[in-house]
Image (cartoon, rainbow, N blue to C red):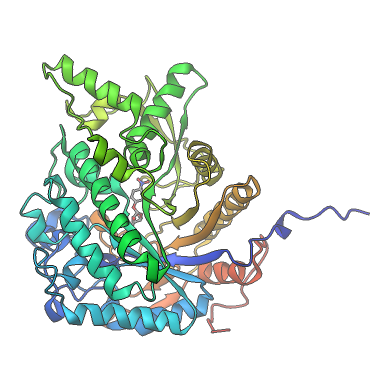
Length: 492
Ligand code: PNW
């Protein structure tokens, strides 16, 4: 008879952590509630509203500051093992240069949120920085100021001190490349500085130093009693060569070095410091322009050592893949800039399923390609997928078949990766609910739950994908034919 083991019987381990992810500025609202300080997204959206696609902001967002019990109820409905959220620095420290002046109302909010999760056995995973820098620090140069690592360590200590008794999984930064390249080297995230020549590189150096200082503060002063883990989340989409030519293979490697190597290499590699080939290129281009030193800063030996190995695990935000060419598909870039330095073209095959976001397509096997590559490059590393998800447009409704197709493909690729021996301990779907999608405002929606942004209560309603994810979490199996009977949610 034909008793071949069906593909859907491949299981996720029982102790694998399934969760969802959010970020403070995208869901909380309460932008000036109870003593919260201003952050760079408050400032930018209030003074330059036209930079946001629908001229919206995060003033109210999904109003989670006042809805945290409902949020945790949704986590229970889905049967989540874990939940990833972020702390708002300016809610906890409205005056960030006085880290001893803690805003108690802000601390109380996070205590309530965390206690409610812990009460229902949901493991909190907390990010210290998801893009919402206190404006007062930006006024002093933000990530470009060499004092940044100290500011960040001061803040990190306040977080560990207040929440580390219950939070055992900390992430310092979310997506350095979006912070440094988009915010400082370009103008597609706050603070839209557009310092194309050195913004990305200076920010990268200060960011990894800040990460390392926070990590060592945790390891030396908190871990012995709190017994948790501290890592960092880096956006690691897959970049493969467009053709099999040597030039395209090199182009893909340089693209990877500039996109995630800049942040991963100093922390996770044996050698430490910035990626070699990228550093050589920037040094060479700097000389050509008449500089006697590279625009890429260096690490002192002491700094290099401080940063090397400063992470208990590697958090991966993974969404899609791109094909890289040494000659084709190039776009205009200012000179000098990171994109002009690497000088490659990036291509997306039109046959890949498209989301509501320009940059997000369903690329076959992209989790497998990215994670096996990282595993081979940084052996013995523990990974968590800290974000993965799909966007739809407002009004697309609750029946989100493309999102379901995407999640099933991603989770199958994740099973392939686990079977290949990569040590991945958890997966956080982006996102629990619709939220403020940065420059796109509320025009691209990533939620398993729809949020009614017209209603004062910001009513949350599960989409079909929520039921599919719930079933996968419960059964530990991806059943390609599972259909919910109706869209009525319950708590098991
Ligand atoms: C992430 N890319 O950003 C962020 O961490 C979230 O805050 C955000 O809402 C979510 O993804 C959806 O955009 C990304 O170009 C930005 O591949 C850019 C990319 C991926 C993720």
